[in-house]
Image 1 (cartoon, rainbow, N blue to C red):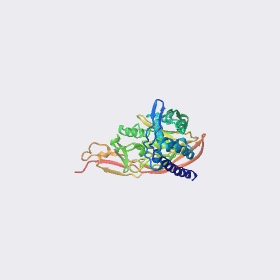
Image 2 (spheres, rainbow, N blue to C red):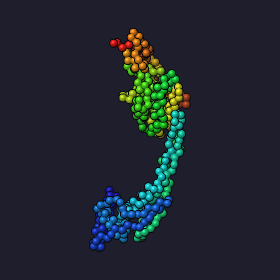
Image 3 (cartoon, rainbow, N blue to C red):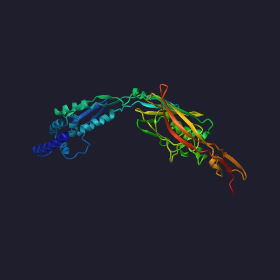
Image 4 (cartoon, helix red, strand yellow):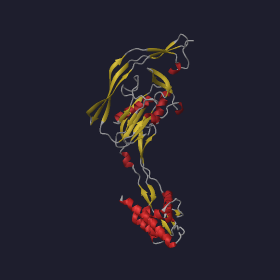
Length: 412
């Protein structure tokens, strides 16, 4: 409140001074702009008429002659206790020139960052770079002194100062510990399915999640259709496996999910498949669907985490790096019941099962064999220095039996 009162007092005083000076001179004198030039690292800026549009008292101040402006400058400093603020009020053209010069010499600092070697699962720290900016405090002090001594022309040589980055290599290295990794195999998969897994994990490679932030698998991978390069491969639909664009990405989300679990991260959202899958134990799968189901992971640590992925011809790996953890997480899957209810369905939809044409009349072909379903329980066991200190049940899921599907000819 005291500061606000000072500024109000200053503006009232400045307005009164303008009136008095105008009364003494009878008419407003022609505005006076100091003939200053400012140089820094070979860049020279000449002070010219202010571009900033002013109004009220400030407009009147800029119309005073040079000597009267200097009188106002002194009082402005008494109120603001800042050479720069006082100059900005009375001589805005000087501040504009300094800002223009600063833009020419400024080099922004670059903080150290975590990077991945593409499709390697490995990370490295990219070094930081210092920045440069105009040393304005000393410059405005020098200009203020010259103005107060009624110098209307002068050439100033400004200095620069180094600006340190907000994060250097040492800070980033504290977030390069391997917190957890997980690998799944797709050696028996067709090339289309391998392609989809590779695309999905490539979009996650190098993702950084800041403390407290969440990573959405669907947002990170984006639209998983034909236009994005995804191909038709098997997905689970209506109790069996059919071919659709993006088939196989659930193996990518599952691999990420398990890496996050052993890394000790929070799981905000995860969904099981309706049928058992072959690439991971029950209760450790992560089904995703662009329209309804997502995998969401939260960074519950005090430093950034980075995801690095690797896809070979036969398997895929997700590694999660961050601050060092002092515990180990072991996944436990337990089958509690087998579900053997046999269901068989007949269909003429040959395209859904990857066939180019329908069977001939009278022919039948089993395209999906019956497999029992299961009930299961998933747990995590936590160890410190090799000693178990906690076990936690995280999921209990039911996976339906896989229907036996028979492809038949269309009736005509």
